[in-house]
Amino acid sequence: KTGGKKSPEITKLLNDLNKKFGMNAVTLGFPKSEDGEIKTIERIPTGSISLDIALGGGLPLGRFIEVSGAYSSTKTTQCLHIIAQAQKRGLVCALVDVEGTTDEAFAESIGVDFDSLIYSRPDGMEEALQLLLDLQKSGEVHLAVLDSIAAMSTNKEQETTMEETVRMGIPQQLLGEYFRKYQANNNRLEREGHKPFTIIGINQLREKIGAYGDPEYTPGGRAKGFACSVDIRLRRGDWISEGTGDNKEIVGQVVKFKIEKNKTFKRMQTGEFDFYFSADNNAGIPEFFNDNYKEIIVCAVEWGVIDRTGSWFVYNGQKYQGMNNLVAALKDDATLIEKLKEEVLFLATRKSD
Image (cartoon, rainbow, N blue to C red; front, top):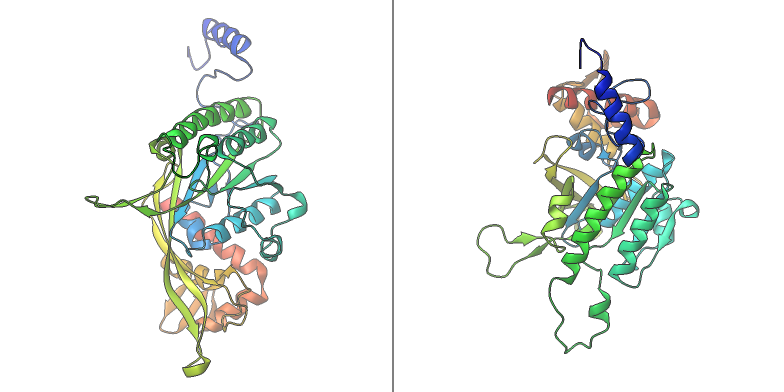
């Protein structure tokens, strides 16, 4: 810059480079929005308020996100909630169901609109990855969930019999190539003014045999770990049971999360939330939903949005005796929980700067 302005030489250079490589290939300074403001990361809710807060407001769009965990840690269910939240915001979503276990009625019960969902059951790893690339290149699809990375089988593996030796490393090499193409395509989409493509890869959490240190790993190779911007690990906590004696019934579970990697917010954040898989629960939470009411109260108390003294909760001068009364107020006023979430998110992201 010369005197706060671009010099004629720099202006000519940028114009020549953009003519050569394409629109917005090179800019002076970081690209700005149309109104000249610094671009902020667009985020979508996950279906868990505490997880949204730990992520910095939700999942960042235009990134590869890995959601891993042991079996029964609600990985797929939470990702279906993310699809439902994204669809509510007008995003076109796709589900690449490698495992072939998605149930339409179950997905629709938690808010997924199957009539506007692009759905595929690929017959191999090569088809699944090429399908994702084609969806991305179109610029018409904004988010895809891959269920799951560990379940993908290569053509080479399928063409051999069970007793034949299969060369190791083929899936890892294919994923490494895919992620290189993925980011290049996203760069092109953003330069052309399209929304970047977001991938949520569901993966299994496995253990190495006889390993020193942390034995846990996720299948897919090292390139996957470098490519992901957010790495969320889910674990099953305690069961939630109600009743006593012969009438005692397990109605839900505690889901614990740890954000192993986050390139858009603070990493190594941890937390937990209650998940109910039975509609017959005292908390009044629908089947296969998280308890957002209890979550937001706990988070609001933690961040000082709600004052708590003993059993009394105070918010905006209004007093509530006991959490049950405050939960009832949240259920009666749908805007109240959104207002609480907005205030908590503002404080959580501001204090981390």
